[in-house]
Length: 251
Image 1 (spheres, rainbow, N blue to C red):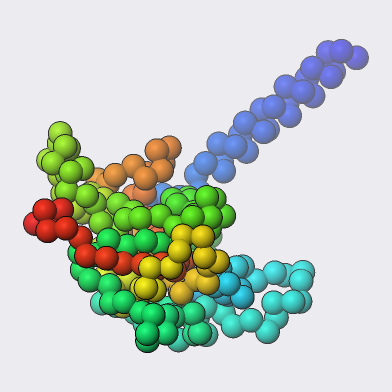
Image 2: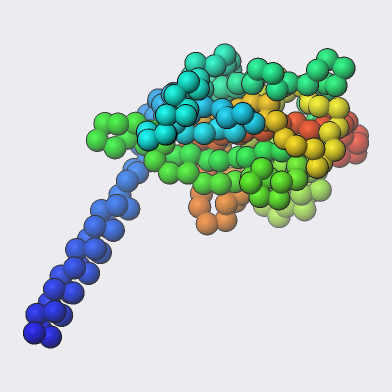
């Protein structure tokens, strides 16, 4: 009887190991980067069709069992703009600063952001293109609940580049997400809200991998995984902006 039990156990372990190996093979990088770009665009539109913004502007997935979100608008049904880079941004109606409270975001400004940043990998499974994995990059909304100042994917400090020991790490593109920088300047900042003020997220920026890091070397924002081929989604509110000192502006 013991031998039979051991045989069954060995067989089940073998099956589990084989199954795990099969599950690892969920993504194969396309040789042609144009194929990945197409995956990104298709997956982004699917994502926009499966998610909405809640009362505080958080991105939420539609529930298949709870009817309370049935009247919510899909992200794809909200007014949005698509930039030449493929980056999409959505300004949430009723969540932008009033004219007497707004500040223009300059190209080199220091930003204070309440933000959730997630990276998504688009792939094709049996011909079905979607985001197949995700990585959390930053989340001040569900984490510290305090805004962050100057994330490196927006603007890398000059001192960091100067201290870098390799040529690639001295480049802005190693840290900064081009599509995010481009789209964030379409928004207006609030006039320096207190850090403890309740958040009301202004909108969403969705950056395809070609406007993020694509297949280039990049700063390890998530130390366990590469962001190669990953698109990025930013859900945020700009609490404040101020000019950057001249000696800190990058060339």
